[in-house]
Image (cartoon, rainbow, N blue to C red; front, side, top):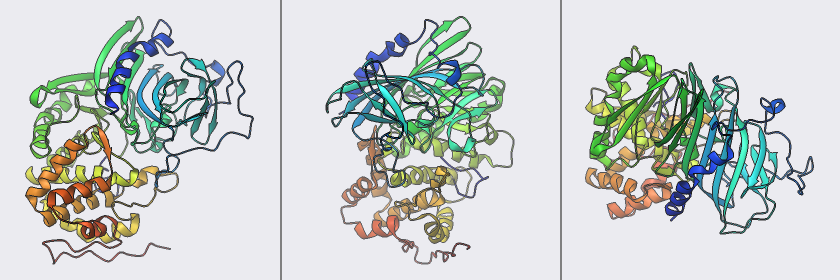
Length: 526
C-alpha cells in the first residue's frame, strides 16, 4: 500500500481447506431465502450501532451483564487484541446483500470453517461494526455476547481440540462511519473494501490477523443493474428478478486484510496475461475508454515482475479503479484497489503512476502470497514492493535507484527516531492504526534490501528473492525466516548486518558507499 503524494510518507492445511471450500458451495444458499438475499436483522436493530445484546439459544444461558469475558488476542506486539487463539480458520463463506444504497447496512451471513487447536468452551471472533442477530455452531444455536471488538460465542457443547467446526453468524455489515477507520469504502456509485491493517472485522466476523490465512467464498446479492466483483475467480451468477447474486471463490489462501468486494455501476474488462493468466479490471462503466491506456499495461508489468522473482503466484489479477478518496492504493489479493484520480489527468508523470501500479502488483508476491506472520514483519511487504517500484521507475524514465536509496539513507535516522527501526516499528498512534504505514517500512525497508544486495552481491540477492517467494508461497513468514534464508544463500553469518539494519537505533554504514551520510535526527517538538 503506497501512500500518495497527499501524504508525508513515500510510497498441510491447503487440502483440508480445499475440501471445505468445495463442499461449502451450497452452505450459505441453504441459509438464505429463495431470492438469494441474506436475511436481515429485525427492523428495530438494522441500524443499531455495535453488536447488540447477548443472545441465548433455547436451553442455554447468556453471560450476565458485566460478566462478559475479556477480549482476547494472539499477542501481536503492534495489535495485541487482534486475532484469536484456539483455532485455525480454514475457509470463510460470506454472503452479503446490498440494499442499493451505500448509506445503509448490508444484510450478511458469515460462515467460518475452522479447526480447533485447543479445547474451547467458547471462542472469540473479531467483529466491531454491525449487529448480530443469531449465531450457530455446527447448526446448533449458540450464545453470543460482545467484549471490546470481540464477538464471544459459547457453543451448546464444548469444542475439542482437533475438531472441525462451523460457526455461522447472521449479522449486518455497516458501511457508515469515518472513512479513515477502514473496512467499507463508499464510492460515488457503491462500495469497495480497504481492510488494511485491522479493519476486516468492521465488515465481517473473522480471525482478523494475517497469520491465519484461509480460502474465501463470496456471495454478493445486489440490484441487477449493478455489478459485484470480489477476490478470486467467478463461480456463478444467478438472477432473481430485481436482484442478482454473484459468487467468487479464491484458489489460494488469503489474509483477511486483503479481502475485496466491489459493488457499483461497473464494467469488468477481461484480457490475458503471461502464460494464459486471466486478467480482469473493474472500472466505472463511464470510464472504460479513459482507463484503457493504463489497464493494458498490466500484462507487461506482470512479465517484468516474473523476470525478476518467478511465476505470478495467484489465480488472476487486475485493477479495481474506484471513484473514492482514500489517499492510497491497496494490494487487495488478485484485485488491487486504486483511486480513479491517480489515472485521470494530473501533474503526475507517467513513470510515477506506472511504478505505483507495479508496487501493488509486487505485493501479490510479497505480502499476499507470502504474508507477514506478525505486523512487525510489515517491512517485508512494503520494503519489497517499494524495491520493485523503484527498480521499475528507474527502467522507465524515473529517478535512479541509487539516487532514491541515497536520499532514503539521508533520512533514515530521522525515520527510525520517528517510528522505530524497520523490523521493530513503534505501535500505531491511538485511533490512527493506519499510521503504522510509515516511511521506515517503505523506503526504509527498501534501503535494507539495497544494503543487503551491496553486502552479498547481486547474484546471491536475486537468488534470495526467487527462493523466498517460492519456498513460502501461500504461507506466512517472519523476518527471522528471511534472514536465515539470506545467510544460507550467502553462505555466511549475517547476524551483525541484520541486527544493525533491521533493529538498530541508528542506520549502519552503507556497504560500498562509505561517503553516504544520514542526517542527524531532530528531537520531536515539545
